[in-house]
Image 1 (cartoon, rainbow, N blue to C red):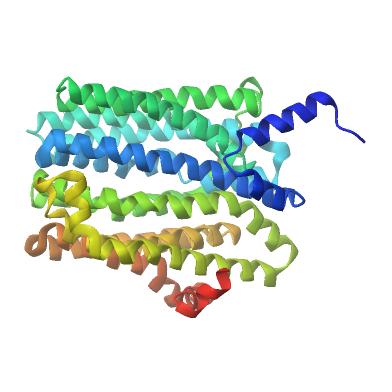
Image 2: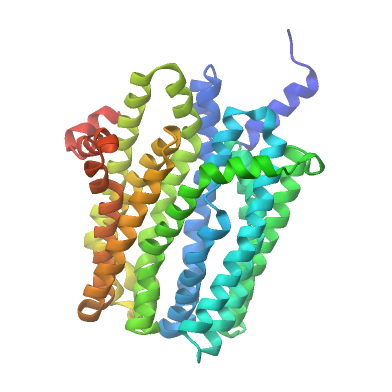
Amino acid sequence: MNKKPSESLHSEKLRSASPIPSFIRRRIKHRPNLLRIVDNIGWLSFDKLLRMGAGLLIGVWMARYLGPEQFGLLSFTTAFVGLFAAVSGLGLQGIVVRDLVRDPGGKEETLGTSAVLQFFGGLLAYGLALGIIFWIRPDDVTAKLLVAILGLMMLFRSSEAAVYWFESQVLSKYVVWVRNGSFLVFAAVNVALILTRAPLVAFAWSIMVEALMVALLLGVMLGRRGPRLRELRITLARAKTLLQDSWPLLFSGIAIAIYMKIDQIMLGQMAGDETVGIYNAAVRVSEMWYFIPMMVMASVFPAILEAKKRSEARYYQRLQVLFDLMVWLSVGVALPMTFLSTPFVTLLFGEAYAASGPVLAIHIWAAVFVFLGVASGKWVLAENRQILSFQRSGIGAVVNVALNFLLIPDFGAAGAATATVISQATAAWFFDGVQPVTRRIFFMKLKAMNPLRIRHLF
C-alpha cells in the first residue's frame, strides 16, 4: 500500500532533519531498527559535541576570568550539590526506561508516578544540601549562597520523565533540541556576564535558570511528542513497585556521586579552593569524554534487551563486542592525552593552571574503567540485579574516600586524581572478580583489554 502524501512528507522532513549523512542512511535503510539506533547516536553525538566544544570554550573563558580561587569555589559548590543529585533522582532512570520498553501500555502511570517521586526526592535533596553546607562551612557566606542557588536545580528533576520516555523510544533528538537550544541561549548569557565583569554569584544564577528553562521545555516537548501530560497518572501501587526496584540504584547513585565528586569536596576542605580550581581544570578535560559511553548505551540498550529475549548466546556476544568497543575507545582518548596534557591545559586555561597538566595525565586513565562501568551497569539492569550496582559503587566510594585521606595531604590534586583512577578500577572491574555472579563479566572485561580484540571491531 502506498503511503499517504502527508506521511511521505513527514518521513522526508525527518530524513532531512537527521544528523546522519544521506549515504549512510541509504546503506542501512533496509534495517529500520539499526537506522533508528544510528540516527539516535547521531543526535546524541551532535548534542555532546556541541556541548563539548562550545561548553569547553565558555568554561575555559570563565575559568580564566574567575581565576583558580573563585573558579575553585564554584567547582566546589557544584560538586557539593552534585553529591545530592542522586537522592533527587531516586535511582529511577534505568528502571523507568526498562519498564517503558517492557510495558508500553502502562506508560502514563509509569511516567506520572516517576515524575512525582522525583519532585519529592528533589525537595529532600535540597534540604540535605542546605543543612550540611551550613554545618561544614558555617562562616563561608558565599559558599552557602552558591549552594542555595545551585541546589534549586534538584527541584526540577520531575522533567527527567520526558528524557526517560524519549530514550525508551530511541528518539533522543527531541531532548537534544531542548537542551542545545537552552545551552546556546545561556552560553550567550555567560559571555555577557564575563564581558560585564559580573560577580561569581551571577554565574550560579545563570546555571540554575538554564536548568529551569530545560525543565519547562522538556515538559512541553513530552506533551507534544509523547503521552499527553493530562493523561499521566499517579498511583501508590506503581510508586511502591518503582521504589522496590530502584532503591539499590538510589544507594548506588549516592555512592557513585561520592566517588565522582568527593575528591573536589575533600580537596576544598583539606587543601583550599585554589587547589580545587587546579584540579577541576584537569577534570573538565578528562570527563568531557564521558559522553561517549552514555551516548552509545542510550542508543543500544533497547537492542541488548531484545537480544536477551531471543538468545542468551547472542546477548553475551553483543556484550563482549560492547566491552571491546568501550576499552579501545577509552584508550584511544587516554593515550595521546597523557603526553599532551600540560601543553593542552596551558593552552586552554592559561599559565595560572599549568599545574593541572600532571593531574590530567593521571586522571584521564579513569576513562577506561568509567566506560566499562557504564556498559556493565546496563547488564546489571538487564539481569535485574540492581543490588550489585549498590555494592560495586559502595566499595568504590569507600576506596576513594580512604585514598583521598591518605594521598591529598602529601600529593594534593595529583593524589586526588590517583585515588579516582584506583577507585574507578575497583568499582568497575576488580569487584566483578570477587562476586561469583559477576565473574563471567570480569573475564569478559579482561578479554576486552587484549589489543588483538581490536580486529573484532572492524
